[in-house]
Image (tube, rainbow, N blue to C red; front, side, top):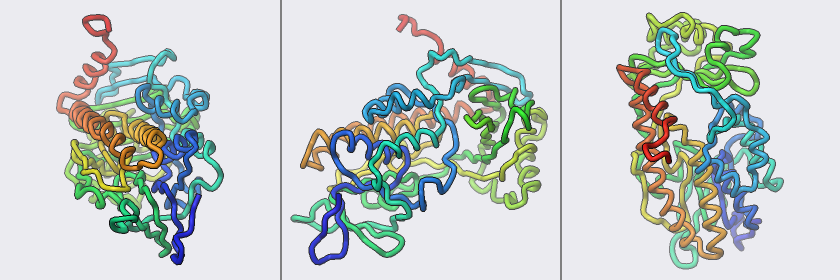
Length: 396
């Protein structure tokens, strides 16, 4: 719902969510379930503008809890990828050093990110998401009756005002400077992302290597992270612990040159692993992994907050990014519903759980990064997975 601001041509939204990712959509859905309207703004021209891609393991205490709050848990279960919790770990010689089967009893079922996003989008009233609305800036409107209000500017030059501005659009937030001077820093890990399509038919050896779920091949501070997608493709991340500029020397506009440049870092690795790069069906895309400070937080600032990567960007090695974004959205939605008419009380309650949860998980992610990219890899990650699977001394 929007209301006129009198003589101004700006539209006013009581709650404005910037970013139609999993966190922002979960927030919008939980608010809707609780009878609260919100407007979502996203820079993409429409929901089909780009492939969402990638498998996500959705955790009981975070992502699954958020889906229950959003009343979408049964719909989620219908989209789970059977076999997706299968795990394989190899060394650089393609020797299998650990395998865990998916017996259907695990607590972290896999789902396609695009399928999960569609579930959330389809659960919202038509028109909730304003597509093609890129936010370029925001400013507080002052004190008194306008305390907590912000004016938001879009790329087309239009503006709107809001009583609650929530940034949920990822790492490079334009709203974060309203709250914090922190900027994401390079973690020391660089990825190159690619796909092998129709793997069982076109790439049967690689399909057998990766298996039904997730596969790691690690050694000497580098490796391959791969998983099977629901469409039968293999999604591959080539990972290097390296200087921030190491990938800048590779010409990623030339497919053959890109493959050769990446494989220079994997001399002596088994041909079956190198084949994950040489057989790529899609362009190789470089991605540098950044993170915010582990204990990132801000002082309570009227009328604005952050969730997901905008609040606690971390490396992906704890598998928590999407899960945290969703539980952030659910917690914020429930806090707003529990404090009708008192936005500041809701934000204070939300941030009281957001900050310690984000810090704890960011530390876990940083530790997992060092576990995976180690001179002794893959042994440290094997030890970690074995420890996870072992019962505690008291049988708990």
